Image 1 (cartoon, helix red, strand yellow):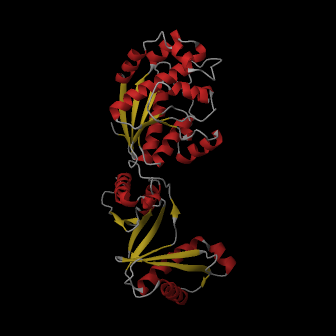
Image 2 (cartoon, helix red, strand yellow):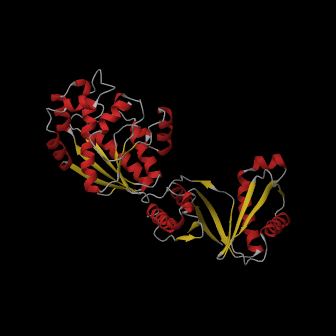
Image 3 (cartoon, one colour):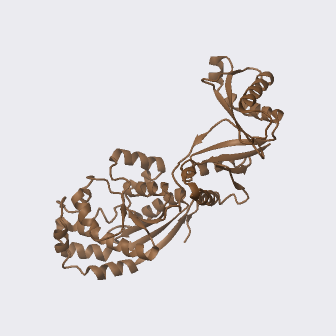
Length: 403
């Protein structure tokens, strides 16, 4: 009897002729998340992936694989020979363990109720699927006292998959994160602040299969080193989901100082965000990103009205993805808690977006107004210097800072 983790994927199966490439990418990502277990075998089978484990590492492997984008469900299973005796003994062993965790429910219904859910992937196996269900159920009833069959609302479902290399027996299908394998949909740059929204936007982008890099605009001494550490922590959390995240930290102090000195106060946020997009586009060209990602939600703040978005967008031709554009703040906070970024995001360290906020920001700025406000700025010089004044660090899944 051998233990394993069965990994299932859903949307990948719809990729037709490209399916094999998606499967290879998913296997690569799973291995990357399991770097602490280099001896584990991660094997592709028809329609799923199987990882052989032992009792000491099974739960840890299961939890990590469930958080790999592209995985829809996982099961901890045992593999036995293709014979009814071994299948019966494996099923009874699993049912005994399940019974210990359901003592109250078992007492209420007068026994441990179960049903068999068999699949016969190996068509050479001697019994048909209905015959296997019936025969295996009868053997369990005969050999394990205090059990009853209930095909409608059983306390336990015994899943049996007969494959060429053996029979896989398990009781549970645990939902996983879903989505597409990271690295299967190109590379993007996330404008990562220290707030709640942008890490969630980054996570949702990872879920659709992009490889994520991040840009953070740091205005020391207007913003503290603790604010930068907070963003680096967020980058590390996203790396735990995505495998790796490169964080590009832009020295933004001179840009903000020039905006504060020369631009109308009411348009300072608009100009600041236009400068951010110009700088992000400069970095994107050197990093070969296909798009930028922001955490904007329509109407949430003054710079996120449709008029503001249009005026800010005018400085770049790059596609800008906004995964949160129609989300309520309550929904964004719920997601941030789910993915583990919320507690870090609410730490009270200001980023450059929250310093020098005007008392009455323009909520519907026009492109002409923004261009007029920028006339006294040496835009190209400021952008070029900021792009050059950028430092990069790499964060790896479950390993933190790499370089």
